[in-house]
Length: 254
Image 1 (cartoon, rainbow, N blue to C red):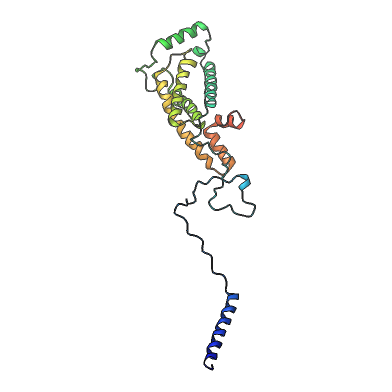
Image 2: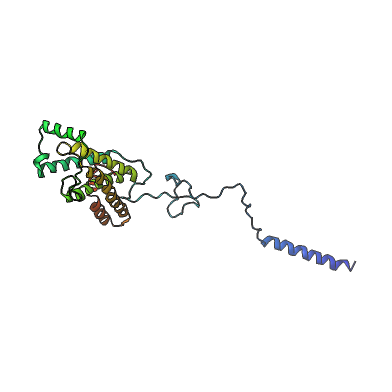
């Protein structure tokens, strides 16, 4: 009996210690269940938050949510957008009309001769004879026009048509085709009532216009990254003065 008492006392002491320890021992951590193999990972293209899903002030958005960022004012339209036809067509017709009027003032003979019989004669010649090309003349004077008009004037005219199409979301090939069509309209429509169409102009105007116009367009797009609004407007107005004027007064949006 005496030998049992020490053993019983030891057992009671052990049970008391275990009971006290159970009151202060924290609960074991709960381990989250491992990710299932069929659970898709968070995607980078998660839809933007709607207004009713936006995080309240002072709290960050939920992980994996992509917040839509509004484009900066003045940024060019994405190339994937549909092209706008009305602005380049109206713009080109206006440029042709003004240019033809200036020709009538600077060179009254033959451009200010508005007699219907003279117009009929010149249009008949334009559509029944090949374009004018006089190989006996010096370079870039094959149509009997001064070389500054042929080299500089027609390059600017072609680039104006080309660039207006490019700023209205035309691709480079479509803008070049637009410049070719505009050149033919100028040679066989606007100017053919005074002079015979020029083979040099039919080739050089859209070709030089596409090269110069693409350079102007690239500069115009690069200016969209300028943080200063006055500086951005200055550069864009320098390379596209008529387009900036039209956009500024709200006539067109491209």
